[in-house]
Length: 187
Image (cartoon, rainbow, N blue to C red; front, side, top):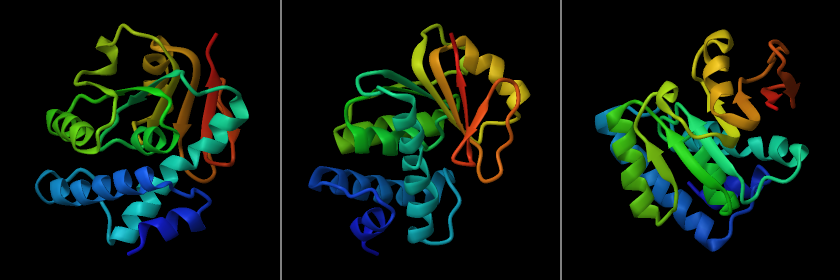
């Protein structure tokens, strides 16, 4: 499988450094997944499209909101690093904190940070315990909006962006962008 071709075909061309990091990410994710069941997938190509490319689709949302480079980002319920790690690798200049309560996932994220030579922080705790506020709070597959919204609002000083999938519906002050993202401005 040619990871470079998939990224290019989807509109996300990679430089040499990005290609190297995404290959490491893919290899380590597959290796760790055998023991820790971090993500589900049927093929490597599906993993790349469903997790890496889907994460990068959030770039359209970020670009539509204005300046986002050198801003602080939190990924709540980061799991195996989606959506934030693909965004960090691709954009480079974002300050990222991954918030994850599961120790095995935190270990994977810490290991991956060293293996890829990336700079981000992992908070191995529940979002309710986080005191810091972030410019952008990202979330994918975390639960019911009614339950997660108050938790996300507590740590946000800018925008909340939630990956919901096709047919997302506006509610609770969230606007739908690109038919699959919920976005809320927090003042």
